[in-house]
Picture 1: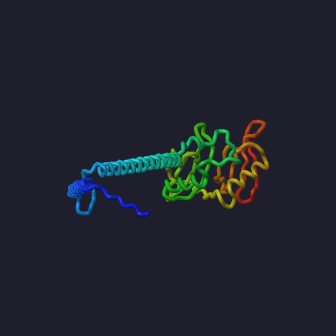
Picture 2 (picture 1 turned 180 degrees about the vertical axis):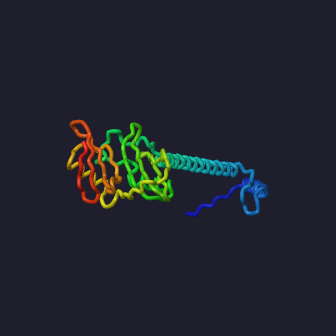
Picture 3 (picture 1 turned 30 degrees about the horizontal axis):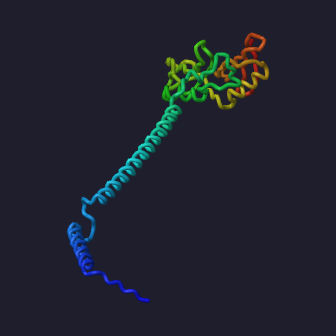
Length: 246
């Protein structure tokens, strides 16, 4: 069954007037909008969204800035620590810390400045020359090398600190002796001479020297005996012959 509803004319007129009012209101609102239909700039909703976006952006920038700063500071601290370690590694050692004690045994311990290095220092100081004597002992202050070189008819006597390499004395004189030159590496090294001497007289090697006597080149090894007293053992560099001087 089809039902038809007929409204009174007054009701229809009232509905038409309501529709007209709504259309007019809509037309006024459309004039406030921009051509592309976007909401006006002072629209509260738009302003709220813009404000929220600005806040989000600011928070993001602040956070990023804080992280970068922290990372930079942390890196700086690490670099500083690394630099500090380098400075400690690169700091010069106290020469006294490397010095051998007065009662050191030269048969088993090596001086900071070896015989070879002492000869180099002396030769550099003189500006050349031939070695005719070298000696090492402890002079109640420090271990010291005493060397004699001849250069251009002049005799040079030098004292060199066996710990630091410092030349502590340098005297010159005319060379009247014309002694033969000596070599701590050939035909016999001082280490070999020390072993030969200890084979005859055990003890602590407190010093040694290499020079010539009546044209014969000999090592003289100074040995402190364990039971007390000391002895000098001479070793011929050519023959290995030993002579003991009590």
